[in-house]
Structures are given as C-alpha cells and as structure tokens.
Amino acid sequence: MPNYTANIRDMQFVLHELLKISGQDVPGYADLERAFTEAVLDAAGKVASEVLAPLNAVGDHEGCKLENGAVRVPAGFDKAFAAMKEGGWTALDCNPDYGGQGMPYVINCAVGEMFVSANMAFNMYQGLTHGAVSAIEAHGTEAQKATYLPKMVACDWTGTMNLTEPHCGTDLGLLRTKAEPQADGSYKITGTKIFISAGDHDLAENIIHLVLAKVPGGGEGTKGISLFIVPKVLVNADGSLGARNAVSVGKVEHKMGIHGSATCVMNYDGATGYLLGDLHKGMRAMFTMMNEARLGVGLQGYAVAEAAYQAALAYAKDRLQGRAVTGVANPAGPADPLIVHPDIRRALMDQKSFLEGARAFTFWGATLIDRAHGLKDAEAEGLISLMTPVIKGFLTDKGFEACVQAQQVWGGHGYIEEQGMSQFVRDARITMIYEGANGVQALDLVGRKLAAEGGKPLMGFFEMVKAECKAHDGDDRMKPFTDPLKAASKQMQAAGMFFLQNAAKNPDAALSGSYDFMHLMGHVCLGLMWTRMAAAAHAALEGGASDRAFYEAKITTGRYYMARHLPACGLHLARIESGSETVMGLSVDQF
Ligand SMILES: Cc1cc2nc3c(=O)[nH]c(=O)nc-3n(C[C@H](O)[C@H](O)[C@H](O)COP(=O)(O)OP(=O)(O)OC[C@H]3O[C@@H](n4cnc5c(N)ncnc54)[C@H](O)[C@@H]3O)c2cc1C
Image (cartoon, rainbow, N blue to C red; front, side, top):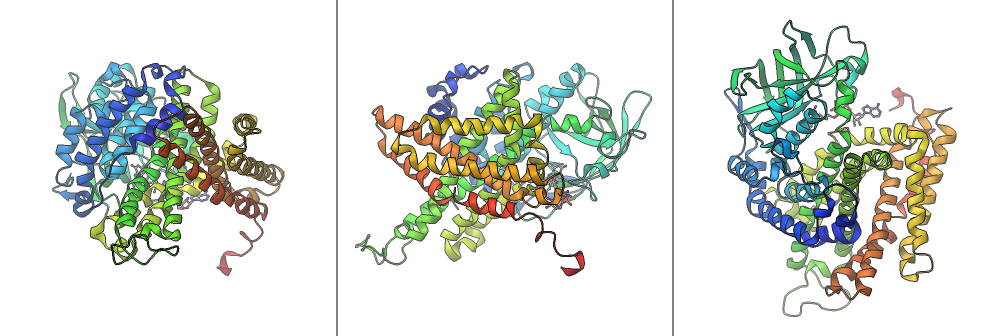
C-alpha cells in the first residue's frame, strides 16, 4: 500500500515565502511565524502518516455497514477519531469561546491537506462537522450556540448537511421536505434526504443534522426554504442527552469511492427540529458557508492527487523497464527505472506542476477568506467569491486527471485493487460531483460571478495579473512566466468580452462556453501563482538560500507549467468563441 509523507517543505514555502503570512495584517497571522507553523505541520504530518494513512485501505475494503438501524464505520476509525480529538486537530480554527484553538483558517487548510491526502473518507466526519459548526456560529441564537457548539467543536457530537433529495440535487427549489410549526416553537420535520455524508456512524454520541426544509406558505422555489437543527438524540435543557428523535437511516449507499465515509439515506418522520437563522432564509444561511465548503472540496481534489503522485514517483524510481534512449542509466541492473523515460517524466511533471500550483492557489484563497472574515475586507470577499467556483471546479477536475496519470505510471499494476492506485482515482472522482457538480460551478462563474458587483472583482483580478507581470518587466529570467501569463490573461479577457457581447441575445452562447472558461481561468490563476512562486524562488537563490535544489526545482517546475499548460487557454478561447451553434445544433431526437 502507498505511503504518504506530508510535503511540509513546500507548504512552508507557500505560507512564508509566497504568502508571507506572518507579515500580513490579518488577525492571528502575526503568531504564524515559520518555527511555529513548522511545529504544527510537523505534528499534523505525523498524525497523517502514522494514524490516518494506514487506515485508508482498511476503510476502502471494509466500508460502512448498516446493522440494526445503526451505521458501523470501518475498524480502527474509532481510535483514530479519538486521537484526532485528543490532539485538538478537529478544533484547530474553531472559536476559543467554544473550545477551539482559534488559529487562522489558512493553517486549518494546510493541516487539512495532509489529513485528506492520508485518508479522505475518514476526514469527512470532522469536515462535515466543521461546516455545521460554522453555520450554527453564523446563524444560531446564543442558546443554540451554547447547546451545540462546545460539543461539536470537540467532535463529541458531529454534524451533517442535508440538502439533497431523491428528485432534487442542483435544483433545490424542488425540495419537498416539510417543516410544520409546533406550539412550543419547534418544528416537525418530515421527508427523505439522500446521499448524506456522515449521516450516521458510531464515532460520536450524537449527530446534529442541519436540514433544509419548507415551512408551508413560505413561497415557491428556493424562497420558501428554511434551515433546521435536527439532533439525532434530543438534547435536554441541562445539556444532557434525552430521547431518540424521529430520524432514521434508510440505507448506506454502495458507491464508487470514499467507502469509509457513510453516505446515508436519512428519513425524517415528524422529527423535532429547531429553526436556524431566519425563517425562509435557509438558502442564504447555507450560502454563507459556501466559499469555505467549496474551497474544502477543491483542496480534496488536489490533496488526494498529492498522495497518488507520491506513490507514482516512488514506483517510477523503483520499477525497472527498458533503457534510457540517451544511454544506459542503471548498468548494474537488467533495465533502467521508469523515471528515465521522457513520457514518464511528462506524466510526473504534469502532476507535480499542477499540485504545487494548486496548493499555492488554495492557500492563497484561504488567506482571502481569513482577510474577508477577520478584517471585513470587502475586496477580499469579492475576490474569493469569484475564485471559489474555479478552486472547486478546476482543482477537482485536474486533481482527478492527476490521479489517473499517477495510476498510469503504475501500468497494469495500477489497475489492481491491492496496490492502492485505483482507490485514489475512485476517491477523487466524487470531488467533481458533490458540493455543486463542476458544470454548475462553471455556470455560477459565468452566470453570476463575472458580473458580480458590476465586474469589480474580475477587473481587480486582471489588474493583479497586470501588476505582477509589470513588476518583472525587464527581468529576462521571468519572461518564461510573464509572457505566457500575459497572453493567457488576454485570452481570458477576450472570452469575457465574448460573453458580454453575446450572452444577452443568446444565453446559450455564454453557457456553452462556461466549462471552458472555468478551465481557462484556472490556468490563468495557476499561472499567476507560478509567476509569484518563481519570483520568490529567484529571490531566495539570490539571497544565498542553502537548499538551492529546492528553489531550482521550483523554477523548472513552474516553467513546465507555463510552457505546457498555459497554451491550453488558446484552445479554451477558440471553443468559447465557437458559441452555441454546434453545441445546441441537434434536436433532442437527433441524439
Ligand atoms: C458520495 C456523495 C456524498 C454526498 N454528500 C452530500 C451531503 O452530505 N449532503 C447533501 O445534501 N448532498 C450530498 N451529496 C449530493 C450531491 O451534492 C449531489 O449529488 C450534487 O449536488 C448533484 O446533484 P444530483 O446528484 O441530484 O445531480 P443533478 O442535479 O440531477 O445534476 C445532474 C447533472 O446535470 C448537471 N446540471 C444540473 N442542472 C444543470 C443546469 N441548470 N445547467 C447545466 N447543467 C446542469 C449537473 O452538473 C450534473 O452533472 C452527496 C453525493 C454523493 C454522491
């Protein structure tokens, strides 16, 4: 089974040399000095490789089982969950008022990357709880916060998000789950939710379900939707656990990947629920956590690919096949290792250049979230809203692709389950689907985000790219970065112009190109990250940094991304400018 070791060196580079976090004016950032983050990441890395990674294949093989109405998680998950709680890893960036450690979100992301790489399915139990904690903290009454948050921050109680129903996933306006007001101010919740992650399990004494439901008379579509707290076990006034609520598990889904994560059909049969936030404003309440939740899924996309890449790299160094075309590299052996072959190098460079760019992009996004929350910085809020569908959609598409490439390096052995490469591919696949399928992310990007605030965040992004290129004017070492970045940014602007000129008269023309635009913009964002990373690496080399090999590799890896991936922007633009004629040209019967 593949081993996993957290890439702490690269994380430290991103946090301190690229983002310079301890110098930023965001609350809590001054404490994030290099030695401090090194200690935190080191400790988290040990948990990831020693506690979580050994359970990754166990979770995949065993899956979750429904027995006598209760879900049992794979063997060993309980001990690992207890260890995570004891180490405070589940409460890293939670509010200290409720028992959290109060660290900035960016640190939670770095640690989260390691935990997801080591065992994505396991990490879902605390990940979902984190989302529910954020929702209750943002929208709960003081009494609700006091009742639920200390237990949930400690992960003694876990949380879920219940949106999806059998007939509605993307189109939540269709949802049917009903909430009927009761004389005591509570509601009776009735309906069926499907695909609920961590819907039931034996890791916690209670599960706090956040459920979207409609109160009769609330209006059509998404307008009439409210959000409710529905505990699995009702909580008494003194905080102790009371009677079982009328919530039950209908089924645990048998699915392609993340077998260790219990994906449940949940039946609410007149269950007691409590309104969270304002009546009929449930969608708005859900959307306040959207940037964080979607960034978390984008992170999953590349974090699984990081683990797959490590396994591919180890195999490429070890497996002997063929001889190098430029001369024998391993005369003592019967053949040379795979890594001598240019095509294997291409596959490894594709993965490495994507992963390091994705990490920088995600951590940068996390600093925007910290800035938006901590400083109420409207510019950062606008920028992260624009970036969110790209982080989610682009990084999960490319993360999946990277997992397939890693599997390909293993040849036929990658297709054999016991080697572990197939699990990475199967696990990564869901990231493209849940938390808003990627096609819908592209729709959100082109349909809403580009024009948000009169296009101010988009213009701000173009200015940022321009300023970055200008900062390196006359520096020949930076031309392999700035030239492709300038060209790609122009292509992105041309695509935006095409939408502007065509969307009003023919909305299909814009939406036929939305997926390509998401990818075009993803490349520009990673191109910007690589330009900044290359500049930081050059600065370190000039400053006499001792680990020259790290910085030289950084520059070469970045040049690879710019030379080999940014040209894709031209293809995306050509597709966008071809409009909708061929996309929508067939009648339904002609398919
Ligand atoms: C393992 C797993 C875990 C999950 N966990 C949770 C959870 O914890 N809580 C929860 O509430 N849900 C959860 N989900 C549900 C998930 O979020 C939905 O499956 C997802 O949002 C898509 O909804 P759907 O499956 O109904 O697809 P549909 O909405 O039917 O969409 C089908 C396809 O059509 C596309 N599409 C839909 N509408 C449009 C449009 N207007 N324009 C263009 N394309 C469109 C979509 O992109 C998609 O590719 C989970 C799902 C899985 C498989």
